[in-house]
Length: 309
Image 1: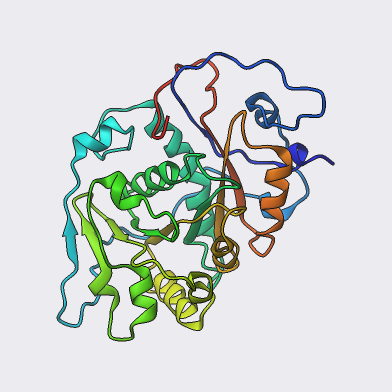
Image 2: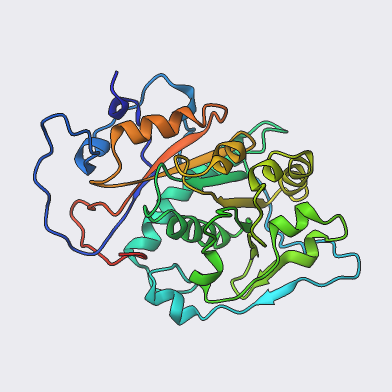
């Protein structure tokens, strides 16, 4: 069975600026084409088996503040007009095609959380890609904001692309301390590095200072305890991790082994079947993996510019 036939349950597509249609690929080139992925069928691999997209979400809406032990978290104020210009979803904004795409993308993810057994950490969602420059961070940010727009969910967006952290720059803010500081210094508490934002129910945990032993820190028992705390403290919370590309950084595979769900971003007309197969082989420990086709055509719709285009 080919890798294309294994790709199932495509979550959605993120439209991109107009481009001329590419010629059919042949002669042994295994570049993924949108029409091939759209025709992918459900296989027998349980990692791609999602529950009904219409499943109700069970938790109640509560935006509970982090316990701070007398310390107050920093509040970031994003320029919402700046975000709109980057095609980032903004709560209360217009009903755009990108907003609609991510409404469809988040539904099976939330359904997995609602149906998960206790202790499975389905609310830890890692967004990654085989290679860089696929629009992974764009997808992670929009997914996080779209989930934060739910009536019964709060979201923590975590930047774990430690070699090339870019979430603060997309938001147009400067955040010096973050995850690495929390893992390295026992005197640093979550409230010291967690940032609230002016997008309701969305918080941000930046990457922090670069460390040469980042992979070992993510594999540490301290990180395991932190993930357990993030997953279990609030029932309504979804934690979205913007991870490094799987084929570029060792940290991604280490983090994947502790996630409840993984969203794999592939770029239309660029990501190859062999790259996808290699990337999937590195996250076999996670049994909830879904595919998100980015920069592809939306049949019967228009094209729209995307971040990084």
